[in-house]
Length: 627
Image 1 (cartoon, helix red, strand yellow):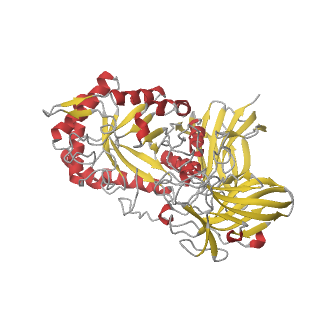
Image 2 (cartoon, rainbow, N blue to C red):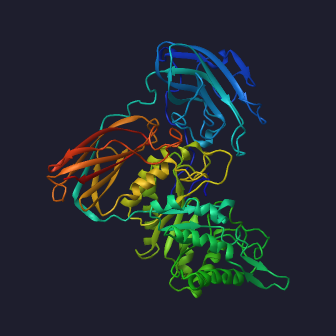
Image 3 (cartoon, rainbow, N blue to C red):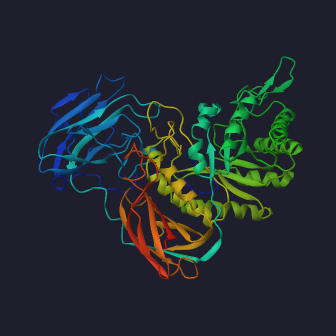
């Protein structure tokens, strides 16, 4: 995976700034407002002024400091408030936006009811500001409260599992409010036009995954337990790396002879095949028995032995496993600073010898690279490939949309295509992101419904750019103490779908011929496909400049002329992913793709639909003949 800290081929400096959001509370706007330091009971927290976070109400705050395992019930601050009238209330907590209930021990109870924080952060400050950001509002609820005295408890429970997560929560103020404070207007309505008779050819879904380097991947049960979920998506390829250092497959005896044992890797290959996919093999990292320093991240002592290892793996997969013609990617993020202790010239030699080995064993194999972390080596790599005459079938790189617009994917693809053309390569070379996701660090964003909107918008760009394969990082989280930990998986370690998985499931339902979609606002987009008498439209709203969950009116106009749906009675079905639907944080007992009520629609030559959609939200619409 990638942490981008410098200028790349794409001339983008990845320094993320907090999104603009009105974070300073005005007490008069809330039904109940209380300063954090006004607790009637404190267990563990200390009251402080200033500190690492800048206060946004009074200067005093409380610091629920949690350096060790907490006592029973955790560290807490208890408040006595007066609820003005019976009803449903949202809870707002102004705190330094390090984590929330879905990735940390932070929780709130109101009248004994635990509040589910369905929106991780208003404005989502980025990870570069993780330890220095100002106080931001966290919104949870609603919960039903009775009129009169009410106890509200702010609690920090167990320790965090990751060393880059802070062990304290700095809180500034709390409030109760009947109106949903997140539902701010995100601007005027957007219009999406679908011409279902204007077909663009067969809809070819991009359903690939990249499973990263976590210890769980060597366990077949890690894969088999998520197989039912993966089969729903129609997965075509799953990228696996660490094939030479995780599976204890390559050994050298005292006499210097190399031996191979692919049995552990085979068990994972079998699980990938069980979901109907084929492995996309990342030739990484160096077998320690071959490397110059005994680590997996160094060049080989003998390039002939490295070539032989790659040849033997390709032979085993093509002959023993009957998997000829696979894609082989040489190394992972050689320019990332941590995965290869060598320069671009050394990588080019590593690439050339690996490719020669693979093709000796399987001439039908597809080969490529460089799986670039920041794009820095792509030009040098392609220049050296051209000079050496080494074969290349595809070019890969990684991108995590940390604070950037998804349009950056399009500009990157254009840059790589231009480079290939300038160097005299043909149009047949495939381009692919062999890792992509929303945030390249452990972050609440990855667990949130906001990632569903991000992934939908990304897939829209990839389709627009004509990519046929790209690999979402990753299918499943590693084992952890809690359900949600901010990792990159579409599925939790307990095999529950996150919102981004629900998006991928909705997307996988698009089938048939792709229909033309245009939008009046680039923050709202869509993909559509007609399969006989059924038309499906995937609609999303995603913008880094608007507040998370800000609602926008979306009008969808569907032109049915020239299709079997025209002039017929139709049934409309819809599925929604947002802060309250298809969202594990909001509905832990029902985390899957949530269907709304269906209805009959009189088709005619055109159907007009109108609904609100949150920023980060996704809606799948299905229109089918119902006669």
